[in-house]
Structures are given as structure tokens and as C-alpha cells.
Length: 228
Image (cartoon, rainbow, N blue to C red; front, top):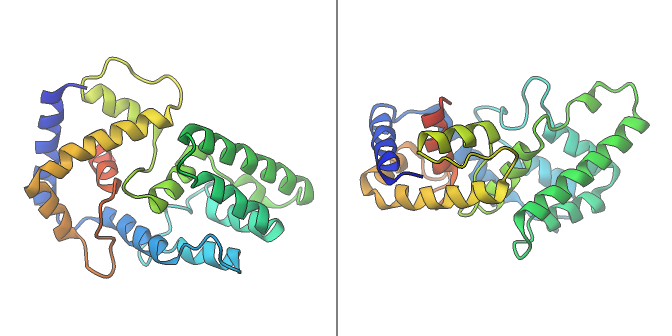
């Protein structure tokens, strides 16, 4: 990435924040706050805990859109095999292991659960609404569990971002480990700009939105640069 292009992009984003303090995108910080408060991997009622951890007073679009209902499908998986799904999340959140391996295993086993669900419910329309983009929802889990280390992932926008910032080595396949490394690097640039951080914090409501360090800010930055 080119330092000059990064600095120019940061200035553009800062100008955007100045003119758009009331942004709808801050709903993600509300859901992050809720997740941080309610997630408990050892909860006796794992299904209820999972459901309560993914909530928002403004929108459900993070986990419910046309032909995209990963939360609903995960609730079905938990109904059938709660202890197994609990294990999958424990493995996904095991920070000592490489992230690409954890993400890959989680997606593989969810695909297996979906296959079993389809066999048991061949006429159910819900079996067509699991993750259209597997990495998208898994990255959301990681971003909500460890907000200082992970950001929601979008492969096409990641490629576009790297191109805009002057990188000549564009990914041809999913490279989640590289994505997270780039997100952490960019956050360091964002964090050093005191005015930018102040503008961001002014968007958030204490008690409703997560106030701590979060790479959601980098996601907001790269989605602004790449067109939403």
C-alpha cells in the first residue's frame, strides 16, 4: 500500500465524518455492544443466549436479508445439536490457533450441518437461506467477539480497497489472515488521527453503542472508500 494514498484516503474519510455525523452505519456499534454484554459460551440455554446476543433496535440486516438468513439457520442448527454448535464457536474463538484454520473448520462443519438439515427437512425453504457468503457471517462473529482484532470481511471490497491504496498484489482468492493484518495496520493510522477519532466518537451514544477499540471503524472507512 502507498503511504500517500492512505493519508489522502484518511483525509477524505475525515471530511465525510464532518459532514455526516448522524450515520445509519453506527447501528453496528449497537449490535457489538449487545454481543459483548450477552455472549456467554457456557450459557445453559445456548440457543437463547445466541439469539439474545445478535440483536439491534434499528435493523436486522447484519443477519437477515433477502436470501440471507444465517442467524435463523444457526438457531436451527442449535436446536438440533446445541453442544456441537457450542464446540464450533469455542474452536472459532480459540485465539491461539491460526485464524484461517479456525474459519475454514467453522464453515466446513456448518456446511455439514446444513447438509444434514436438508436431508431431514427436504421441503423446508429455510434450507436455502444459509450463508450466501460464508466468510461474511463468520467474520462478524469474530469482529463482535474480539473487536480489537477483527473486522467484518468482504472479499470484493477488500480487493477494491487494496487497489485504491496502491497495492499491486491483489488477492485472487479469500485471504482472511491478510485481510485482518491490513485492517489492523489501517486502524493504527486511524487511531493516530485525534480529530478523526473524536468525530467518530461523537456519533456514538454512551450506553447504546460500544465505546472501546473496534475495527468496525476500519470497516466503516473501507466501505466509505469502496462505495458502501
